[in-house]
Each structure stands twice: as C-alpha cells, then as structure tokens.
Amino acid sequence: MAKPIGIFDSGLGGLTVARAVREAFPGENLVYLGDTARVPYGTRSAETVVKYAIGCAERLLSFDIKLLVVACNTASGVALGELQARLDIPVVGVIQPGALAGVKATRSGRIGILATAGTVASGAYERAIHSENDAMNVFARPAPLFVPLAEEGWITGDVPQLAARRDLQPLADADVDTIVLGCTHYPLLSETIHAVAAELLGHEVAIVDSAAATAATLTEMLGASAGVRGPSGSLQILVTDLPGQFGTAASRFLGKPLQGLDIRAIDL
Ligand code: DGL
Image 1 (cartoon, protein in one colour):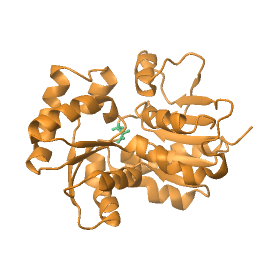
Image 2 (cartoon, rainbow, N blue to C red):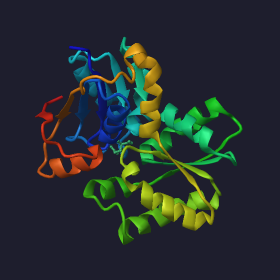
Image 3 (cartoon, rainbow, N blue to C red):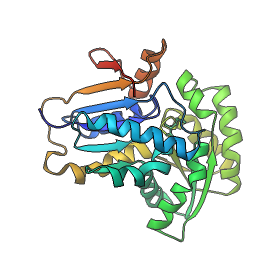
Image 4 (spheres, protein in one colour):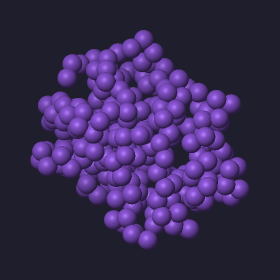
C-alpha cells in the first residue's frame, strides 16, 4: 500500500485541511491526528505547543508517512522549524501557503490576518508575508470566539455576526483589501466573515483560506502521483479524546458524514 500523508491539528478543525487535501488528491491515503484531549493550542504558550506538536508528529511517523502536514496554524507558527529539523520527511505548514495566497490576492498591499492569540503572538504570518514581499502592510488580529463558534456550528446569524464585527473592526480601520483566515476553524465562518468585512469596509474584500492554499502547494511535493485519478485513498482519523459530540463536529469540518471512516482514540 502507498505510504500515507500525515496531518495533525490541535483538534478537529484541521479536518478542513484534510478535506482540501482529499479534494485535491483523492487517491492519497491520509492519516489525520486530532489532539482533541488538549485542544485548544491557540491560547497556550509556544513552549507547550512545540512539545505537543513533537508528540503528534512522532506518533504519525509510526504510520510510515511520506509527508507531514501541520494543519494547525498555531503549531505551524511556533513549531514548524523544530519539526523540520527533527524529521527526515518533508514537513509542510499552513502559514507560508496562506501568506503567499494573501500576497497574490491583495491589490492595495494591505493584508489582514485573523488567527488565534498564539499565532498572532508568533508573528509568523508577518514574517511569511514579508519573505514574499517586504512592501506589504500586515495587520494581524486574534479572533478567539470563532473557534468555539465553529465547533458549536454557530456559523451564521446574530452571534457570529456580533463576534465578527468586534474582531474585524481593527482590520476595517486598517482598510485591508484581503483577509487571510489563519486558523483551521475559520473557513466554516467564511461567509459571515466576508459579509461583515465588506459591510465594515464599504468595499469588497478577498478572503483567503489557508487550508485550500496549503493543499495547492502539495502538488510539487507529491510529484508524479499528484492529481492521478485512481481508486479513492483512505482516511484514518486518530483522536486523543473521543467526546460525545465528536461525530457532529468532525463531519462539519470534514464537510461530509463520517460513515465508513476508520476512527480511533489513542494516547500520546
Ligand atoms: N487549530 C488551531 C489553529 O489553527 C485552532 C484551534 C486551537 O486553538 O487549537 O490555530
């Protein structure tokens, strides 16, 4: 059997990345690890997130993965270098692809980033964007309520709109024309974020999903097998805790029901 691609996240939000990878490369086998027992990572210290990220990566290596995707923005922001130094397989984070997509999308050179507090504090999006083009103006803001809202499925209506107005106002004040969704959970709220941002800014704004941007960058790494249409690849889901609401939340992020998937609880 072909070696799988390993993907990990702090929890279930990274299934948005697994979904994008599956759509782009339906023939690939994927092993997804969600650290549901220790989510969220976004509010923890960088040191703790690095330690957790190493644990997730090491467990995925036991599946003989050929490539590791760090689906979690917070872990990509603080632990990517450490993982790349430790592992002898390619390790891809979500920040560089999201940053590049943001640079390509902007016309005014004013890019907003919405992310967890940990990702914002890491300054990783600013560094990644400036490594592409140092003339860009980057405004990164935390949007802490979007994570629980996405998990609860409150993705449209008054409550997410209120949260979006609060968190997007500073980006509207900075007059950005592009907003990068720098967190696994935020793509679920992209409709609300787009509508509220356009309303506050008074003009159209491009919304960049770093999950989709990351899947697009794998083409080169997967080489000849990329995009080959064959039998569908497998998706195995490992979680460090299997809570009662797991099925509803996981299928929301994955965009489809979980029937037929191999789901296992593991200890790290
Ligand atoms: N996966 C995290 C991220 O993309 C969001 C959830 C968390 O805080 O763990 O930053």
